[in-house]
Length: 259
Image (cartoon, rainbow, N blue to C red; front, side):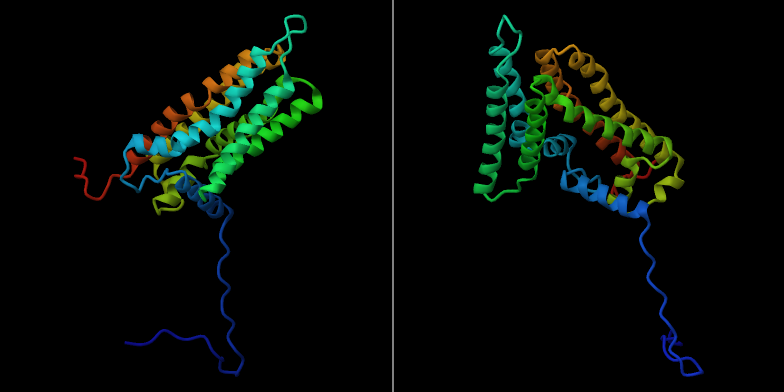
């Protein structure tokens, strides 16, 4: 057996340069980032968790649900209850103050219990930014502008990724399942990932189509209510469908071979 040559001086006495390590492609970096984000959210198809467990974990359990729903719910309830019949406007400062206060409490509780504060802190920042829009303009409906922007960005990202053949769902799943970008050579996987990305794009688009007319009509109560209804109640089923579809593409090793 001969040993592999070791880089060293050539015959002229000059050192042979080592080949530089290949830099990761942008697609690999994006795939890893999406995969790690999905893993932190509990969406790892390689795990043997049940669908219910995965969906519940993705929503953050009871605490995650309260942190994402309660600030918005308090805002819309307080604003509606304080509407002045003469002006048709509710108490903007009181609504925003209570909403932000609840988000701050959630964050403090997580800090006190030394638990991850990502969800609570994200909700606090989102609530603060939304409140800033409403305060600076004096219009309660502008509290929803950041949500519109987020839905537009996410929806566009999913739609574009599907149309160009680089589904964001496929990039994340490929990383988690250890196959990298090999899924793009599999016609069945490409098709499934395409439609999953389209489904997610459709969710974000539906939110905009339903909520924007209410925003322009300055119907804060209806807008806030539909935002809550089109939040977790639509997010959870789509998470479940995505999980089941991806897991079906990768049979477990102990599963009997398909005939």
